[in-house]
Image (tube, rainbow, N blue to C red; front, side, top):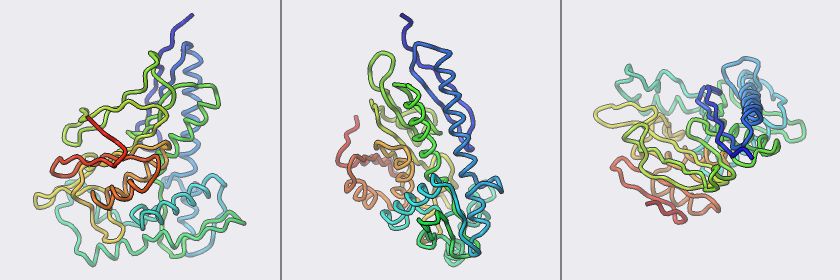
Length: 310
């Protein structure tokens, strides 16, 4: 009998590098499942993208302050879950971040100074999840103020990974990984029967790890200032913006979230970064089946109560 192997494919989807891995003793069958996964991610991208005028997200944004837009149930429910996370994190996670003016936070070499406090505050004036009005009966979404924009940058990759995992399991894939640019979800085991080994990225050294975890049936998401940042007056600022102040957050190099769902893991990494070490850990410690690892700017490592790393 042919032995199980890991069959993988990497490609760019949703503006990110996705790697789909399937364990099977049949290469052709595994490749067919990977193609199914790619089709599913592409379908989700078409729904959520803001780079296409005819996507449902773009239609919602186009009609901000004008009229509610009827959307598919899938999009409606994702927005509803996003607003719950916003409420839980007191707005540290907010899908209406799309209204931020990119001129102030382009995080390229031209950015040599932070905007003044008043300019920053004005730029985030339209970020307010409480102004997203959902109508359950008609399945419509309405942004109350003109100029408001929603975007799924903080939850979309995790959602796509989780949905793809669900499709693969339905198709009979017993073990695999869907990795959406570091936001990943796992199920089953490696061909040798052992859990998957996941590397936690070292924020100071690209392509190396500071720790490894053995997991199965667990999702992992990492948000780090090593991906996109700017240094101003010797201080490093992450591409993550605090919706309340309008300024980039500082103090944390990376946040890794572990839980059973990639969508939630993806969504929780940003607010923990925004909240900071103490408040972020306090939030995670109140949640069931969730753990986190935080590395601050001084390379101190903090973990939630329910995880130990070596």
